[in-house]
Amino acid sequence: EVQLVETGGGLIQPGGSLRLSCAASGFTVSSNYMSWVRQAPGKGLEWVSVIYSGGSTYYADSVKGRFTISRDNSKNTLYLQMNSLRAEDTAVYYCARSNYGDYENDLTFDYWGQGTLVTVSS
Amino acid sequence: QSVLTQPPSVSGAPGQRVTISCTGSSSNIGAGYDVHWYQQLPGTAPKLLIYGNSNRPSGVPDRFSGSKSGTSASLAITGLQAEDEADYYCQSYDSSLNWVFGGGTKLTVL
Image 1 (cartoon, rainbow over the protein chains, first blue to last red):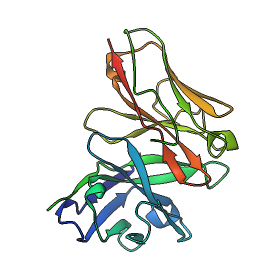
Image 2 (tube, chains in turn brown, green; image 1 turned 120 degrees about the vertical axis):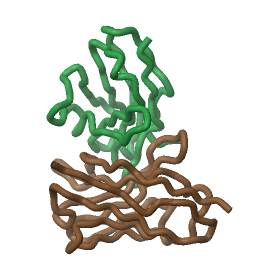
Image 3 (cartoon, rainbow over the protein chains, first blue to last red; image 1 turned 180 degrees about the vertical axis):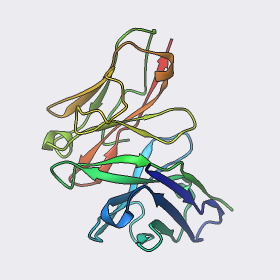
Image 4 (tube, rainbow over the protein chains, first blue to last red; image 1 turned 135 degrees about the vertical axis):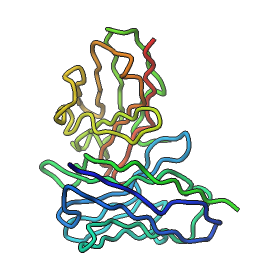
């Protein structure tokens, strides 16, 4: 059974840093595309970042240069390092396994974790 | 403003059919990229409902169906049930913005 468990959220001051973890079971993180998607309180979903099985990474413009996605193959875990945090980064952060059909760009998010809340406030 | 436009809300009585539209542009849906749909029940994580425009993952009832034409896509739900009350999101790829979601549609079962 595929399971994703996010940890690491919490209250952080503006300008601070936080690292989110997503422990996976039931499949191999390094063999899949993995993404982070966030949802601000009462708002819709926003794609944040993806790491391809080959290691390529991509980011939304809103987090580029501040967030870094990575993985630890030995721990089967996905990470999101978040630096220079802003109030607008406040959201529930979900990790999601990503899959595609014929083309890499046609990514879909087929399994999601339960999310971890990040609150950026002084 | 989301790149993919959905109605903020739709409603229907039990047993009825409702549709949720997702309107994009030539840089996303109209460029031929697939549309996927997610259901988010209150207080839970999103769940994949439709992938590749019209395909249902295992376990999703055939009451849910998806279609795509031109720069738009639609999710149809037939035989509406109380448990279908949730937020629904479309998602695709945009050549300028990477992966994008619609703003979400809240379905109310009357």
